[in-house]
Length: 376
Image 1 (cartoon, rainbow, N blue to C red):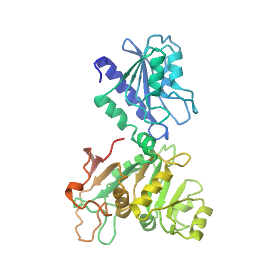
Image 2: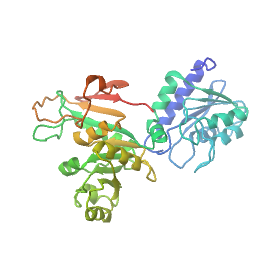
Image 3: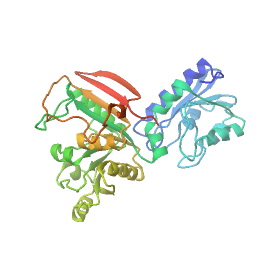
Image 4: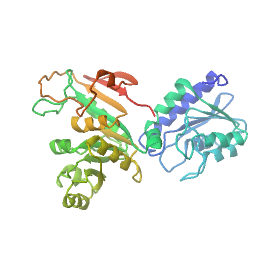
């Protein structure tokens, strides 16, 4: 961070980033934001953006001060304060009205309606503004990868999840895959589902497993939208996905070659059908993500649970941003046993995608490997 920011400033900004994480899974398509109000290093109030459409973090932190005089106080916030009025008034107005003299910001807002404007307005009003750099800024950006990617590309951030054996297989040569991962690992996947806007599989997985793709953990406040990539609109009307469509949103992504009668049947059963174009699967994946990002509300984050074929198409399209891979203590063998990613892939080692970061974690009997491929 800049030299004018003290160690105590860094600590309070870390606290603001930590508070922002409380909004994960409940604020989309808005970003996760946390804020702290302090004077002379002593915390006066804290807050975070709790739900989309409700008060922003800065307003909640100011309210948490209980009406205290904030003249000359410092506001620490994990994301650049907004300067436009949407469902909530501009946070820059609330900051200046409270008499706050200094604002320390962890990361920028990449959207066109912000992108430095909020900081400029605060400076014009005589508020001292400090913008973080280094590790703290990077941490704050990583907390909002879905928001940042959607702001910059119009597409959702994609998390690919899979489970494989020690020898890199996700199914036997006969297609059996249930269950490679431990029960604790599968419970963790339900937590991830609750944190994203949508969960996606391919038609092969939908037909073989007849999944629900819902969050089945106690206290879940919302269900992600379920998405099936189904070029020919073959999804069975009596499947669990379609049967639950009136209650839990279902989107079926089809190609222009899909029969009109099949599309209409899915729509009549309560599914939303998205028709995509492109001369190959990666191009159709890219078009699908663009269309999903334009829905109301948009899909800004997607958990890809589909099989190797669909995952390969996403990878070839350059649309996988993070991989979470459970490695189970099993050895399957078999020349025809399936790998996590198919598709075209890289032809030379020099062309391989190198992860920006790699972490490991023990989950019961499994090892969870997390690889971040892109940063937005």
